[in-house]
Structures are given as structure tokens and as C-alpha cells.
Length: 238
Image 1 (cartoon, rainbow, N blue to C red):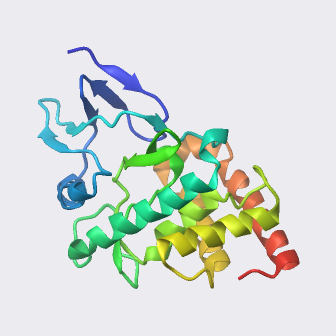
Image 2 (cartoon, rainbow, N blue to C red; image 1 turned 120 degrees about the horizontal axis):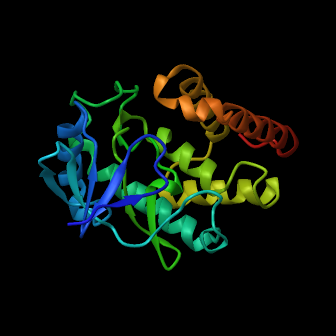
């Protein structure tokens, strides 16, 4: 069957073949496939179909709209944010049986509470009618505290950046996400800043991020760090 290149991925060449997606594999792929099978009852992850003759993993294609940046106006409502938070909670809760396992691409981050996706931004989420219906690209999954995913999802969806809205409304949406996920918002700003610091570190140090480094994505994240710190000083949020 013909292969259709899927755009948007920053690191991997991904193609669609009929109702499947073919992606490169790594030493962590068996562990990721185990996670996807564990999460299958949630209905939010692709089905695993194994490895093809070219050594690529074969996953079911999830139809819908991927939330590529900038976040589309249809994905900026509170309904989207609430559904997203509840989806993340379901995925996290379903992952706990694999918390103590090894074989992931990245080492466990303590205190390891769940298996985090590791890059849970809208560009790795499939939407239909403005609501999240699936999550893709689990290569960065690893055991970690819940906040590792929550902080990055909040950063992207509030969003805690100059992208749109006022700092007051951004923080209102951040607190709404936490409430719907079921975790306190205390310390959220520090978690988001720590998450962005790790993004900057990866862009500057990881050879895989050579394109992002050349395009100065680290400066992009640092400008959002400045935005969060300035808003935090004015609004006194935690």
C-alpha cells in the first residue's frame, strides 16, 4: 500500500499506510508497546500491531485533528481543557502497574508515581469536535511524578505564555486544569518552570534536537519563563 508522510513530528519520520501508522523503533519500543496495551481500555491510545518488515512499529491510525501549534481557537475553550485534564488523569491512573519497570528511553524521575507520557502537549494529542480523543508518540514515556505531565499540559493549554489571554485568565485555566485532574495547584508555577528548564537543557545538549537548537527554540521557552515569572510576581500565584 502507498505510504503517506505525516507532518508535524520534530524528530521521527512517520508515515500512514492505510489504517496504520509506521514509526521508527528504539530499545524502549517493547516497553512502550506494553504501556499502550495496558492503557488500551481507556480508549485514548493507538492499538499495537507489532513490527513491519522494515523494522518499524505498526500502530493504528487515530483519526482527527492533531493540536499543532499555535493552538487553534477551537481548542482554547474551557471544555477542551477540562476534557484534556480528565483524559490525562485516566491515562496516569491506568499506568501505575508499570511504575517499577525499566527499559524506558529516559530514566525514572523520582518520586515515580505513574508512567508519564513525557511530552503531553496538544501536538501529541488527537482532537475531534474540539475534544481530545487520543494521545500519540509515547517514545518519551517513563515513570515520573504526576506533575511532570500535568505541568507541561497546563503550560501548553492555559497557556502560560504571551500567546493569548491575560495572565489572570491563564492562571484561572491552570487552576481549572488541576481541579479537573484532581491535584492541588500549589507549587504548579515551580513545576512549570522546572519543566521548561528541562526543555531548554535538552535543546541545548541533546544531539537529537539539532534543528530545534538551530531555530532557537530555547530562546522561545526562555521568553515564556520570563512571562511566567513576571505574571507570578504581579498575581502572587504559587
